[in-house]
Every structure is written in C-alpha cells, then in structure tokens.
Image (tube, rainbow, N blue to C red; front, side, top):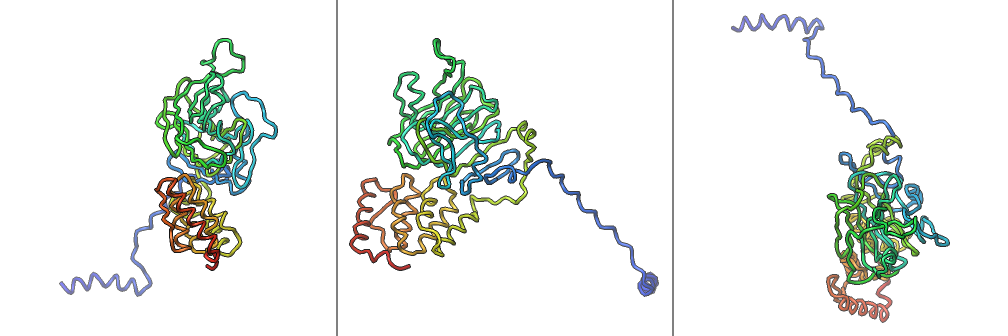
Length: 392
C-alpha cells in the first residue's frame, strides 16, 4: 500500500518541482449590481430631510433650520377668501410662518394614506391648522382646524371646537353665491382648555385606515371620508385672519406615481439614511457643542427641548447639555416647567435639579396649582440667593 501511494504522489511532486500547479475551480463572478432607478434622488429633490424609505412609503422631515426648506412649500388655500394686508408665508425664526388668510402646501403630490405631525406656535386663538388639497386643485378638500369659527359662521354657529371638515360642491346650499363651497363636519370636539396666543400645540392630521384623522395632545378625532374620496393630494397648513409658526413637520406616506414620473424623481437617496429616532442629528450635536463653548445661549436649547414635536434623541442630548452647566441655564429652563406636555416639564425638572441640587417639590405630573407653588418657591429662592446661578 505504501509503495502504491508513493507512486501516485510522485507525478504530483515532480510537477510541483517543475513549476506546474494543480488546476483549481474558477472563482464565481461577482453578482451584478442592482440597477439604479433613473431620476433625481429624493434627498436631492427635496430640501427637507429624508428619514426613511420603506417599500413605496417615505418619511420627510422639515425643521426649517435653514431657509432653503421653504422651497418645498407653495402659498395658497383652496377656498375663496378675502386677502389680508401683509399676508403670506415666510421663513421666520427657523420656522415656517403662515400669516393672514392663506396657507402653505407641500409641493409633492401624495397618494393613498398620509400622516402629518407638526408643532404649531399660535399667534391667535382660532381658525388655523392643517389641510389636504386635491392634486387637481378641485373643490373636494379637507381642513383640520384648531378652534374653527370661520366656516361655522356660514351656518350661523359659534364653533370654537377642534374640527375636521370635508368640502365639496355637492353640499352647496340653494341660493348660495357661485363661489360658495359646501361642507360637512366629519368630527369635532372642544378642548378642555381653549388655546391662546403663545401656546405651542402638537398637531397630527391626515388619512389613516381610510378615515380622516386629527390628533391633539388631549384627544384624537376620526371620521369617514365623505363625498369624493381623496386619491392624490398635497398636505399643508392654513390660517384665517391670524398667524402661526410651523415647526418639526414630519410627513409619512406614498408619493404619487404619476407625479414622480412627471418630476423624474427616483425612490432612492444619494446619501445613506440616518435613523433620527435613535441617533442624534449633526445640527443638534453642533448646537450642544456651541453651547458648551459659549457660542449659543441656553434659550436656543430650551426651545428644542420644550418642543413636543422634536425628536427624542435630540431633546435628550440638549437636556444633558443644559444639565452640564453653567447654572445660569436655570433661568431659561424654568420655561419648561410651565409647558403643557408632561415630557417637557420632566426635562425642565431634571435640569433644575441637576444644576441646583434640589427640586423645590416640583412634580411634572402634579396639578397646575401644585406646580405653580413649586415654581414660585424656586423663583423666590433665586431672588433671595442670586449666587445660586453662579458657577458651573
């Protein structure tokens, strides 16, 4: 057996010595790269940030940190209304300003279901909110109104409820003028506390599971989509004889295939996506760094922390930055203790306790009267002992 094995091995050994080699299988060719969809990538076409692409659904976010984001919005409302002097849309204090009797609608056309969330800083107490406008600019549109009264005047009612309204010429009343568009109330409910100028409200609106919906921090409204159902449309915002600032807009839905083909937009991005629901964005990191270097005031961080529409990782990071000192940040952070949402109050309480070492009995979940007592005690202590704000 040993002799046979040696004889079999000898030719191989000689071949190796002579510089030969044993043939091996050819490597598998690399798989062909997936074809790149033609058209402009989403992150080049839109000025807002692309947060996600899931199948055909996308998520866009507008924090209006730069004026260029205004380019994705067009001025106008679908209903006939007299103009107000000085009205329009603008970039103001890193937010979208809607002023007068007008609106701002997104430039893309969406199809199927869409949901919009945002933060609204009110400069009035009624007749403002969200809107869905048909892509063909027809009369079948919907409004998602904060303390609606303007349309209520048509039926001689007082209104003053958060309301979803669907419009359409099929609901015109006999004897009405040619420009009158009838409507139906889909759902409505008064808030327990009426909003006022200066309030920051969290609003969600759109179409979910075939129903029109509107979410506030206090309750949700849902109702069937009556009349001509939405197919392709543009979401937006409106005001009637008032003003508001819009921030932290997140739109989730499906872009219209016809619109994408017309605009030559591809369902892809040039840059890799960053999940901002778990990661801190670069702008927030820079804001925290600038604050630590003394280049930005605490009030700029407090504004983000106190915005219930801001992403949690960003709020957490800026809360930590404020809590790291200096202690004079307490004066700006006190504003958080007054906020209507629990999360903002909790951030404020944490910052005050970290910087001063005591909480003055303040509990974010306590009643408004109890919270006011604690804030009063905090302010009195600062007045008697101004040195508390000195140092890191």
